[in-house]
Image 1 (tube, rainbow, N blue to C red):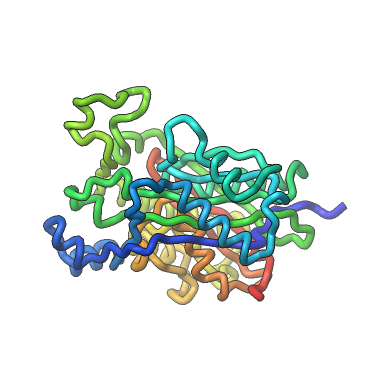
Image 2: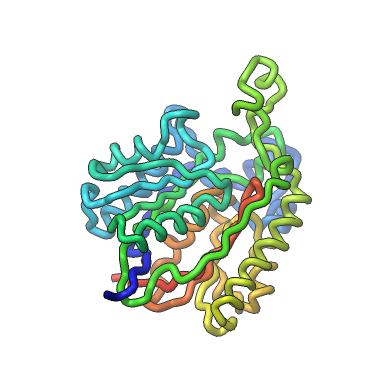
Length: 332
């Protein structure tokens, strides 16, 4: 019997209509377009303005886009993994609601949280289930409504993040395509540098935590940048070395879209031409769990069956890693 690998067979995405441009941010905080662009590469980000809609709305839209484009019936899906840092509710898993709303009545579902590495970890999880022969169709969605946890008076964070969702369908492959290898890492040293102080079991919500604005994202930008640059570049180089890949062998870099300088450092370490480095940070900013699948959706038309893709990400915790995947289809 041929070895089972887990391949991506379809992708989908959704971003809200409202565009928060750098020019608009100039009216909200002390910043400017040139400063933001030169340091991050971001020009605009999408924001879900409807206060009655949460991350589930974004995830459902992305899933529906995938189902429609691929002709997949929702009842065929065995499992739904929702990679997110911003679940709708603290207890009831958002993935369960999403699965029900899209009609995935035969699927079990759960949330996966590893900050900006959540989708990467979700890919690994889905592949393990499929390679074990347990399930046939696993929907991995990366979705975050980052605007719900961003302080728009804090110029250090409000310029970076946006809202969005992307989805990928994983299925068994017997041609040797799909996920080939992974190196995933984590280090609790990062706990203090990128976090939300309040709202968890350590510091439950109170009048004091609200007054102190402790329910918004805090980021020690310089420290996070330093760790992200070194670790994301290192891990991407290591997965190439582990699989005897040269820069000529790699067709595309699918990198987390947090900062253009981090992406550039990673691609430079890998020795890649700029044409192989996929970037859409200028349109969406950092959508956290959604950056990788949004890249897949935006550039799906470029991928050819058999292409070598290197995924790389870095997130709070710290969490980071790289995945080597062979693309399984040509877009019709």
